[in-house]
Amino acid sequence: MKDRLNNIEQETLVKIDQAEDFQALEKIRVEVLGKKGALTEILKGMGKLSKEERPIIGQVANEVREKITEKLNEKNENLKWERLRKQIIEESLDVTASKNLVNIGHRHPLNQTMEQLENLFRHMGFSVIDGPEIESVENNFDKLNSPKNHPSRDLSDTFYIDKETLLRTHTSPVQVRTMLSQKPPIRMVSAGRTFRFDDVDDTHSPMFYQIEGLVVDENVSMANLIDTINVFIKNLFGEEFETRFRPHYFPFTEPSMEVDVSCFDCKGEGCSTCNHTGWSMELLGCGMVHPNVLEMCGIDSEKYTGFAFGMGVDRITMVKYGIPNIRLLYDNDKRFLKQF
Ligand code: DAH
Image (cartoon, rainbow, N blue to C red; front, side, top):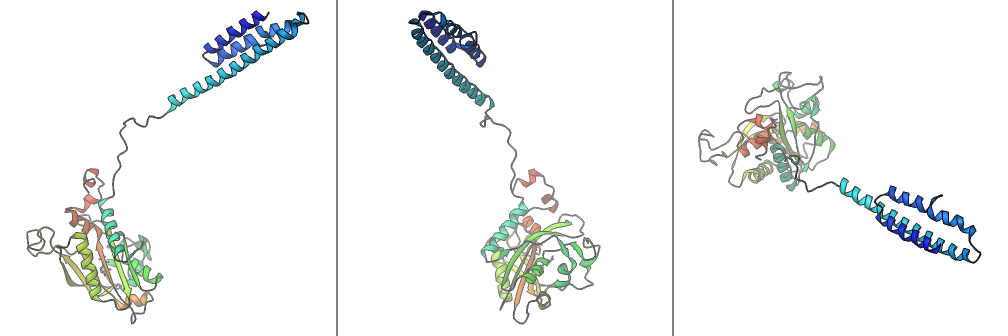
């Protein structure tokens, strides 16, 4: 009897070792420890043994059952780990595989110019402010001292949403918003989209970008305005660039000026690009804030003065990179845009 028990133990342990899956393992368990299993049969037959033999064989049989059970559990664990290992290998993602990655672009040249300008003015102590593209007629025209009969108010020049609202024709209404909500000293710039009923040609688009600047404080003078513009032009284009201030008219500034910059091709020598004048096309408008504008925005024009400026971001970008046609900036042709 003892020998049979030892044989069962040896055979079963070898079989368990060789079992390849959970099914095989379960089959072994049933064959040995199940209701009709080999070991169970022996235990059932114990009654027939003599009184002396019974405890001895009983002890051996129990030891054999314990060993087999332990081995079964151990194998079961091993199979579980093996299954997990295989699963990990099968389901893992090979991140080293070289695929055609998504083509990641970069900032649009217009955004680059705007960011460069904003950063420059931030360094000069200006805050950067955002304004809405849908604006009131009041902020866009009235509070900017724009005469009621001014042609830019016409339906043929401006996109109206209703009688009181429109797509802003310039970024200047952000000046109004700032003065209405802040007390001097004010130093701000604001860049964004503007809209006019323009037909598209090489230099015109019904939607284009502007950047606006406003400074209001005590004792702000024209000298401050000219110095600020000079610092920013030289910073943007290079020290060698000169500026020229020409008298002009804007309703919201008095006096008003337009600013020319040395020709980008000849740097002022005179060439065919600049019609031998040495100056490139007008780049920005500026002036001292009209007292009427200050007053309409609740600022005491006896105590405070201010200057303002506004310019086309598209124009600056085109001049800076020598882009001949504004449409190129809006066509979204990656072959063009990736050059910048
Ligand atoms: N708003 C003007 C335009 O769209 C540009 C401009 C001129 C802005 C003079 C100003 C300024 O702030 O002082 O043509």
